[in-house]
Image 1 (cartoon, rainbow, N blue to C red):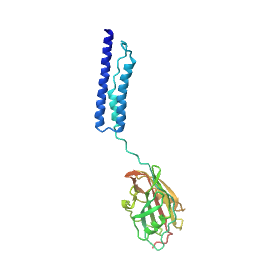
Image 2: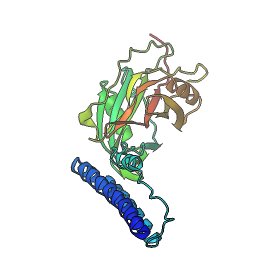
Image 3: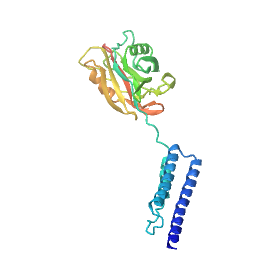
Image 4: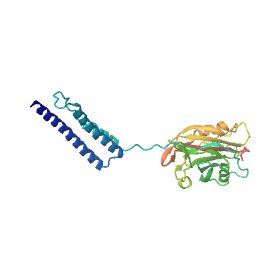
Length: 291
């Protein structure tokens, strides 16, 4: 009689395990039908396997007729549900790993002797994955100066942009500041220069220039020439650093001081804000007496 009673007790215990297994299978099937991901499917199968394995271990571990068998351990349905919910959560947005194109070297740019034009020419330079200038468009055009600026860019050397470590086509904002050959100069008002999406690569829109500061002509020289600086702009449009790519004392420091005060809107790559570099050429003409 005692053996029959023990057998009945073990049978009821295993029946409860079987019932829990069936409930878990039904919940899992319902979740799968609702559109769980492959991760949820794997976790669901693992959860069911844990329940089934627990039942088998307890069944095999207690000798037939034993009155001291350990009480069955109930499966933790809440923990299983938490694992399944976590696996079905959407994956975080993929981060864009972008390294901007970099100006390596630049030639001198001279103020045209037959021109009295002044101001800032802003170019949108599209570059290949090899860092070669492929197309030059004008965001801000000044007659008699734009052609000189565009020609100068063609001889520059660039280090290509990288996306996930691979070279990609890109674009760069390049500004030429032409100061007329006078000692006393009232600079023209600068209107923001916004890139034209049609003149850039489809993936890259270079930085826009919101405002500029003009470099002062040193009072202790009568030299002429150009200083080329490269401004590192972060993904919020803030100036991080300014470097001289082409130095020309005594104009280098006034050019660096002015470039640090420029304001920008950030560049975008694949629709996301990214760091960028902007090249600025300060062209100084040998001053003559003011008329």
